[in-house]
Length: 491
Image 1 (cartoon, rainbow, N blue to C red):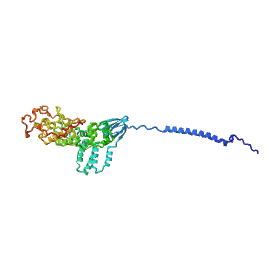
Image 2: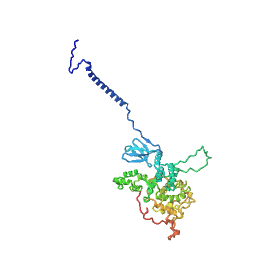
Image 3: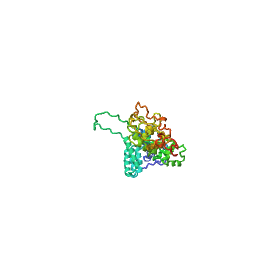
Image 4: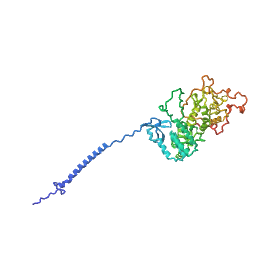
């Protein structure tokens, strides 16, 4: 057999050979396969993009508390680094409303970094209590005050009972306990009797129910304490660091505020009394409610002991006089006795009351001529004799004369009050009873004696000590350090 000669092409491969042509076919298949894979991959990417859900919508955090009782405590963190503490009233898309003290304050959302809603009060109380040792009386007293401000009276009483077991002689704990018991009584509505359990007897004529006497709030009481604080003998007080920082920021242009970082850091370390003094000098009245006065200012303690508890409640605020339905324009509360709400409410009523001719009941310029005191003197010795008509029949004087020890103590109290007298930013409308006077009574109850009718005015010779003129029985001049001799700046 003759072997067929082999033809060679350029490169040495035969075009008719399937084996040699396979690489080219494979190249074409590879290109087609890659294209197919690209198309499939792109389809999968598109499918994945279509199937992937869109970003969730922003959470709707708009809320509005139905009432003050349901407003949670919160801290508003501002974009400038400041923080504002209060109660969250409402949170909308464009603004947030926070109750600071009793004033709702609106803040733009653009100025807010975040709003931190604090846990419930009882949860925070449990955490704070766990961090205080059972024998740490001072720490527990601070916790009691924290609970009182938040009206957790039951929990505060539990802590006070524990404090008195640890320290039975703690007078401040006993005083705080009496106060909180009264606050709890005021805050607790009376239980309504069950008519099914105890069927009511046959109806009979009864006196109309006594209206609830309006009392000052805890915040109003604290504000009066701030205005009456004597920085020479200050009561215990607290001012938090956040308040000092906001004070520095608000009054940064004042010469009283240090400009250097070191000076401001030193100011942050000052005592609460020094910070309150700075507030007074700056007239930063918007910061006064942020100062928490723990004890009584000296002047208000004198009012409590020498006036309110000594004779005002037992002689003037009785149901037959200025504590009953026939009290007239001057009506006082005789409920809760010496508890702070009754004490400060009666004080504010006396502070603002004027006679029918506009004369203030308390004369701070001449305390010995105050109608408040003269209405308690025997009629023949008084510049403002008390009425004896109508419901005042049977009235008896409080003081025997201007030499009476209680009269002199009341004078000392009036002189101890801050002067010049501040205008408290407290809104309060006192109640009024029916008039004490009969329609045909010729002498007005609060009419001052004329000059000819003043006691002792008809005597030509200077009175002897035994028959001294009560209107002239003024005490010796005040020492140079007294408020009357040394004027103090207004607050």
